[in-house]
Every structure is written in structure tokens, then in C-alpha cells.
Length: 269
Image 1 (cartoon, rainbow, N blue to C red):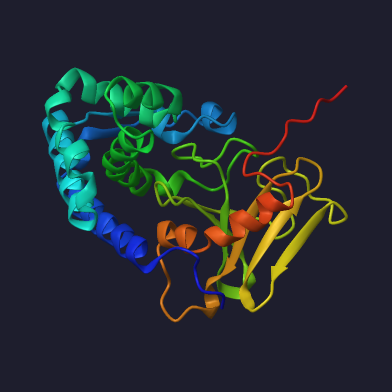
Image 2: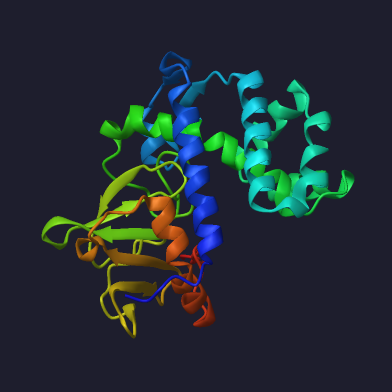
């Protein structure tokens, strides 16, 4: 199998982050997550998390921001000055705003926040997203039994993350996995997760030399792609987040060929 282009140091950081998130998730009161899964809304593509009342523990969220800052500084001391300044700028009102904007993928807000506070662009959204995910992951665990399919183009049926990762499991069945919330759902072997195209003439599979476990499924109808990994070839099954990270070279290859994780909408007469 092709080795990941991600450095060992960043892989280790990511593993430490996932360990933190697992710890954080255990401290969330499951009763603070109350699903209201309207089937008509789900069928139309509304993510289950958007239909769920999630009562966030804001002081705990702020504590998690401090913990992730400490972890990042331990891995890169050059970040200390900027990260230590963030705690003093985050109050409960700002934390609530961070949660709302991270939930809705509002990168414009976070870029503006970074500019206003003299931070690198990636920092605020990375921190907010990292601290939000345990709530999304617990939500996915609670509602997983209701997740049997996804609406093409709507992304993950739990959190709305763009669909980009599939694995082949027992008997070669294809299963979509979400690296953000860990939800999973079945999918057809030859079908575009982004536009629903099932024409084998316009769906192709790009193979990777020296990597028998990986393929890139591309759709010539919408110019979208997903990564397809045969995890049956792995001795240890990685989490969706680690699998997504360690196959980032597939994203580069797909994008070099003109494909994107969000397909182009096709106008119909």
C-alpha cells in the first residue's frame, strides 16, 4: 500500500486529538442530546444533527479549547504566543457563536475572526471544529439506527459533511463513512454519492500504482469524486478520520484530474 504523504508528526498529532475527543465525548451527558428525526426532513436531505436539540455545556467547550491549545503547543511551541492569547478573547457568547458557525461550515466567519484578532486563518475554525466534533459524534451514535441511506449531494445524513470516503467491508459491500461524526450508511458499488448517477459509462475508477487497497471513484456527470478503500486489506481497521487523513494523496490525485468533493449541480429542463 502507498504510504501516506502526511508526516508522521502530524499523524501523531491527529491521533492525540482523536484520543482527546474520545475523552471529551465521555463527559457529555447523553440526555443533553435530544433527536427529533422528522422523516420528511431527513428524506429531503436535512442532517439529523440539525433536527436534534443539543444542549452544549459552554464552560466545558471552553475548557476543551484550552486543552486542544495545550496539545498544539506541545507539538509546536511556535504556536504558543498566538494560542495562549485566544483564551482571553473567548467568552460564553463568542463560544456559542463558534459552535453555530462551525456547525454550518461558515469559514468566512472564522477567516474574519482570525483577521480581526491577528491569528492565522486556520486556527479559529480548527479549534471550534475540534471541540464541536464530540457532540456530533455522540449525536451520530444516538441516531445511527435511523441512518439507512443518504440523499445524493446532501453529504453526511447526520452532520452534513461532504461525502468523500467509502470503504469496502464484508463481501465487498460499499459503506460510506463520515470522518467528522463517524456516521456510516450503505451505498451502491457503482453510484455517485454526489449526484446519484449510476451509469457505469460515466463513472470510472482511478487506481493507484502500488496501492491495491485504494481507488478513486469519479463521476463525469458532476465531476465529483469519493475515495474508496478496501479495509479488508488492513490488519487493523483505522477510524474514518485517520483513514481520511492518511489517504489525502487520493484527494490530490482526484483534484489534479479535475474532480471535486462537491459535484456540479446539473440543470434539468
